[in-house]
Image (cartoon, rainbow, N blue to C red):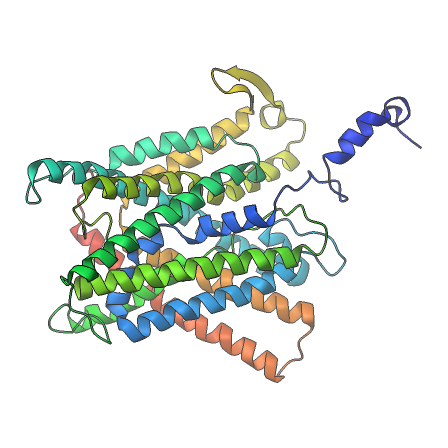
Length: 466
């Protein structure tokens, strides 16, 4: 039986149908361009600036090899994940946990959720730290330019973290992930900008001939580092590289008709290949310029002082990128909590009712009181943690190490085995299991190196001091 609206106002039904997909969910708006932008936003991030340091710990051979290997593994497993966008029954899987539930089920769904959302929380904290470091670098670069490179231009990070958090509170009120396409495009442009500036400055140093000492194996024991530091920093560097390629937690809501997996594979290839070129250039040229003494972040640790306006512009691009990227990673967390609360208390007006208010220069804005309170509280919490633990390289390495294996390797490969019904103990099954095992060992070693780095940083750290 048709509804009253269907009989008396068919245009209303057509309009409603235009806003939903064939499964009754809100219509997807993602395209190849926006999917590629989301991936580039997620991949070319703060991690790119630590790659020169990472290669300095590993050397030319191991550093370059690990960079390329992570790129290949990431692309390969991402194509497996794209093939799992639809379940065997044809239904769409809108979240990573939905995919795991469709193909693996059981406790693996909870383990996936723990790994995914733990990674997302860690990334938002890391981005808060990194944005504040870039803001401090802008202030210092201007100070050094005016007073000289030897001047005392110190300022604490935490006021800038608070300022970053205030901006994120405002942006967090955007209700839907697919509304963030414009943010991802802006962020992708910013990523290209500061990565290109970093590469250009490194090339200028190499061209000048004033380069640091490099070697096939990287930092030299007894000269640059102790034997134990060499081991731990090499592991941490591996974690940094893993973090720089991590984007499997982001699923795009493509609007194209089936098969969506082909579009997502194209977006993945575009994203990974583009970023790999930037990574190799940034990492290798940075190492060539600074050698074994490459800074942890050559734009904020003042590998370059001049031209100061260009350094400031690059750091401003980093901040703008991280402002947008924070939302790309935070939105899945927001939606998880909100969806669960909506289902638990469907009649609660505080949780479910939308209010329309007029904001000067922005027009009408939809406000939900639960969304306002919950998202604001989340941003405040991540900002507070960032203020307490403002360690850049160690945080990056630990996030990369803990997230890479389960989300980028284990779950995609296991779901591929289940989907394609790969015969147990066959050559392909053994090869895939070997990939899982090797990547697990690499992730554990990287995590250990990052934890050692964190412990050393905590020993020397005094909270709320510049």
